[in-house]
Image (cartoon, rainbow, N blue to C red; front, side):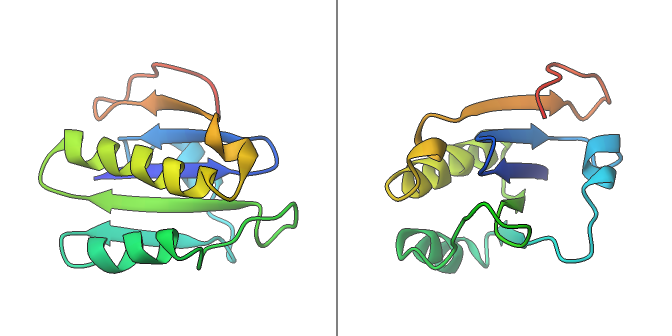
Length: 115
């Protein structure tokens, strides 16, 4: 499973593989938006992204989103991140070219400090 943070006002996408990562825990605000993607929900959730059902704006409730992606392989999980970025980029120019970085691996190591 990966935890993916999408930030709109400061466009970036960060992948976290470690659920105990301090950044994942720090972002635990009560009203955070979470989209869960797994084998059972992937078709429905991808349709929602394609149909522009998820909006972003520079407001507290719409400025970011967390994705919890659990698929068969790490490659599938990361691939979904890039497809979602492409879909969001059709409507939100800042997200089109946003950096996608990995913050922490499953072993707890930090690869990049962009978050």
